[in-house]
Length: 314
Length: 302
Image 1 (cartoon, chains in turn orange, cyan):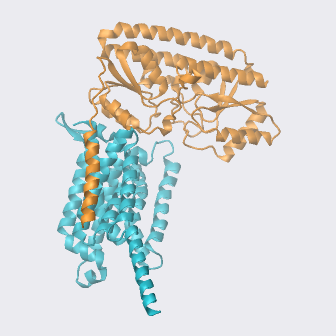
Image 2: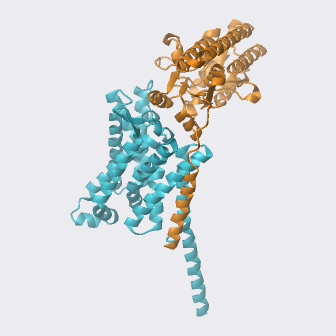
Image 3: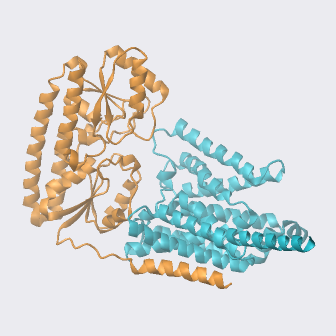
């Protein structure tokens, strides 16, 4: 009996000790607009446009696959304090979408990046019989990303008119930067002969890129990184690669390289030399150490990897 | 209310609501029924979705509860045949229902984002964001209300049918002889288990339900022989687990449901080893004592 009481007492104290630590003081934001963003691309965009007048908390850090993201408690606190939430939409954030909609009902400005572009410019998964699934990877189209930037700047300006000019200036500078990026990409893509412009990756993240820069994009897994590529997919793809004489494939920073490795083995058994030409950033930005932690730097790194991989393999 | 307070409150209410029927699951040795239910409810959601074509319809919750009850009923029927044990019966029913649901989804709903995540989204961390408004007034998180109602229902059921539950749990044959309809009490209990699981699924997610239903009740079972005491200890441990789990999650900045599950597992293990009545440590001690006694006897004999 005594021991039992002791146990209850200890357990009770344990939980009380926890209580005293609760309710961390809300961070003083110095009058900055508190913004919560989902993908690291949107974090970069919000920081660039908001500049010194915003405090941005990105939920999905570098290297995090949005399909697998789990919220931590600090993410929850940030979401609770946010004035503005910016998310990608098009089902990318799956179960978060509902939460953002709820936040939208309570004086939180919720911006969906997909609202910045015309519905008609949203691409769909190309597989037959499943035309419904939309492709959320809009950040791989620089022209669409420019529209998203403009949209976010406009919405931020009307939310915080005091700094509207500042946001517009930043957006203009950013859009100029994106135009330069676009020119750079076109320049590099031109190095690859049109007949060998094939981009083979693990999941279908690069459709928008392919459409904008005239690349044929083939993904093993489809849009969702949760579904694994079946053996049938792999052998079909291997035939396709041998048939078109494709020499280089790419892995992705936030997706397991397993299926791409299986593909290389499958083509090797068909006596075709296929090389893994390196990792592309697909669903998240890179780290500051690799100097790929901004949208433009990430895209440049990707296009260099793609073009170098394809031209070297020729 | 701050975010942490709200999350803690929800966690406590869900934990207690689950722990109450959990006591009887543990005593009847059918704890894994809760695990089966958390999976088979998907079938109910899918079937209800085919009828409503709306992922936000409340009918989906009702469908889930009904299939939960059907799960229990089928498990019972198979087990009653006396050909297989309870765990084997669970092993038959749970994969069957779950895979029918998966097949239906792949056949007919491939283009709809339909899985447990979509309907019974369930993450404790998000619970404070889904709120109830009455005439523009913020009435607090929706799951706090839903689970409070379920908690009260569970508590009232146990309070009013305490004697019946006690007799049917400990001596079903005697209960039947007395003219009780143990079946009715039993199915009422299992309906509550199913309803609690569906409600809790929606507010805290699936890992926690099994933990909440089994962990505290098992600790209570190991600490006392009296049913009344077992219920109060179970409730107390459920509260301690969820409060400290939430605190630790915020302290380490990690997932809340996961942390509560870890704390629950930890306290249950602790009780398992150190329970003064039937803990492993005590058993070892008793064995040693018995061996010494035996040695002594042998010595005196020789």
